[in-house]
Structure formats: structure tokens, C-alpha cells
Image (tube, rainbow over all chains, first blue to last red; front, side):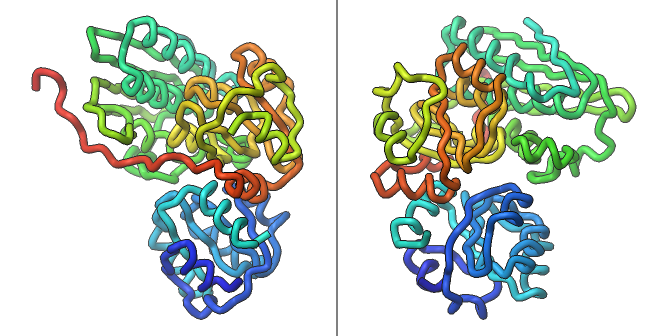
Length: 111
Length: 143
Length: 127
């Protein structure tokens, strides 16, 4: 499944990094603890989080994640969006809570 | 009623909130009102536990109105506007790893309380005053 | 979904609440911070979390959650277990990631937390 397919299936809104939309998703991680994500997430992962600060972009870039999905209707800070644009990181948002987004992706076979 | 809260020990956080809940249930207040007071009180209690030396949570119930005053002795807040921004936190990395200091405390309090006031003096401490009264119910009970 | 089904779905171990497994969880939610539990926790919700300390159990208690599952192979600490016993809050531990735990329950039809609507301020009585 690609990022754009996941976005369409789940109704995720694309905020930045449209060039990353064709990327294939290799797995997913749900965590709001950056240290945990740094230890566990792999290249091509979708990262589900409610965190909205610019560090999220740094982590996504470092780990070569497919995209960051900010859940629960949280709005990324302007600095986060700007950094994401500069670094080509794909950020998606959804009003749905992490549990439901994880659930739907898992149901679609993202594991 | 007032409960002392120890600073520097977030592991004890929640006791004042639990006691508050017990008292409000005894007073027969509506579940949605009790919930909001408990959530806001818990957030205020966590702030004291994480950031202050010591503090107190004062609870007053008059008919169906509740007033909570959380006051502490500690470093105080230099920039209140900044502190109120959702996501802003001065909690340590360790605190965050344990589930504290997410920076949503004041946002939660403001959302739950019907009246919210905060004063602080650097080097002295902080006082948060919140009032609550019943809200009309809809199908989906917020907040 | 009864807690005994949750345990089966998550390969979970019951630490507190062996006698409470017929309790129903009506929804589930994932959180790694106490403030998030306070934000969307509702009576009857099952909490999936990486938090392991007593204040997390306290939050579950005051919000009347159905139970708590600590994920990622982590274990709640002794104070958390003790408090869970005192307040009769079912407490479980499962080896899976938070993502997998959410997925396993969601595909078994356990729905997510209800939306939290924005409420405008209401006037005080007498205003």
C-alpha cells in the first residue's frame, strides 16, 4: 500500500510533502514518545502521533519514514509545516484518534 | 475541603483528584460536571507534582457550583501566555517518558472549567482558580 | 468486548482483575500521556498504553475506564499494580506494539473513543 492509497482509504488530509505520496508503506508505529520511535520505527513506516512540534519532522527525516500522520485533529505548528516543506517530509492529518487510525490501517494489511 | 500536594513526586499524582471525585459524587452532582472538575483538578495536581515544591488544592461546593483553587509554592511562571499554549512544556524528558508533562494541562483545564484564572509570581508560586457549573447535555457528552 | 476476549486478542497477561474478566469494554483508546487519557477517557473505555506508573492507573480509576493494557512488552511497576488492586482496575500486559494492539482489537470490532466536541462556554446560573 502506498501513502496516497492509505490517505484515500482513511480520508487523511495531506498537508506537506506530496512528492512522498507514491511511497510504499513498509509498516507502522504508533507512539508519542520520540525516543521510542527512534528505536523502533523503520524506513518506509507510517508514524501515528499526536505530537505537533518540529522535532517530529527531524525524526521522520532521520528514519526515512514514509509519512507522519498526526491524529486526533491536532494541528501541526507553523514551524513544523515549514520544516516539513523544507525537508520534503510528508505530513498527513486526521480528526480520528490514534486507536481508530491504527485499527483501520491494520485492517488494510499494514503490519 | 483542601488537600495538600507534594511537589517533586509525580508518582503520587492523582490522589487529590480521586478524593475530589469522591466528594463530588457524595454531593450528588451531575456526572458530566464531576468529570470536568476531576479532569481539571488532576491536571492542576500534576502541575504541582511536576513543577512545584508543594501546594494545595482547595475545593468548594455550593449547590451545583464548584470552585477549585490550586495554589503552589515554587519557581512560578515567567511567561504565562507561553505556558498556556497547548504543547508547551518545561517538564523533563524523563517526566515525558513516564507520561507527564505533555503540555496539555492548561488546555485541558480551560476546556473543562467554565471560568479559569491564573496568577503567578516568579520565585514564589502559582495559583489557578477554576469554577464549574452544569452544562446542558447533548447526545455526545463533552468535553 | 469482554475483557477475557481482549486478553485473548492481545496475548495479554492479567496482572490485576482475574475475577473481572466478564466486564465489558465499550470502546478503546491509545495514549502515552496522562493528559491524553484525561482528554478522551470515558467510562467503559479500554486504555492501551505504554505508561507503567500509578498516576496512569489513577487516571483510569477517576474516569471509570473498563481496564488498562500496558503494551510493548512493558510491565507496570509495583505501585501501579498495588493501586490497581486497591481500586479494582483491571490491569493487563501484552507483548505487542501499541499499533498492533490497536489493530488486533479494531478488527474485532472494538470501536474507538467517541469524538470530543468543542463546547462553547455556558453562562453561569443567574448570569
